[in-house]
Image 1 (tube, rainbow, N blue to C red):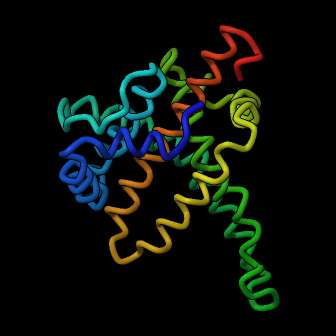
Image 2 (cartoon, helix red, strand yellow):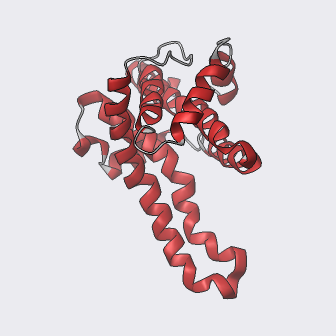
Length: 201
């Protein structure tokens, strides 16, 4: 079973990882153009899904990065932004009375949004169908099959983003690249283990 530590060691063994992440961080800041950065995440998820060596890929084939990034963005919008937004809206009436506890309705969206998005992209990459990518019961089954292995990396990503606020674009891009690759690697491992036998999961 892959661990976040192993995934990070492999990815950051690339001597050019810093430059590649700087490029991604800059692209994230530019509206519309930032679809190419999302496309980069798409490539990382696909490589892990195929069981390929997890390194930061080169920035190339910009047209494909843009188109696949748009797919990633749509799934991210539906599975992360919308649930977090609904949670935020539900928390507004309780702001004065509950203080920081008023944000509790946002927690499910924050904790599940990223893993669900990667699971949806993972499914989309099989057939290129949004219908398959947005089958919520199937996505939930993927999350359940990980047996809570995604919780700590998700909390780590949230913590890294919070601590790294002064360097937010770089931290968000780099942390997301590593954690999204880990999610996909875990899904791939479970998928392969099931083909061999349940005892290997």
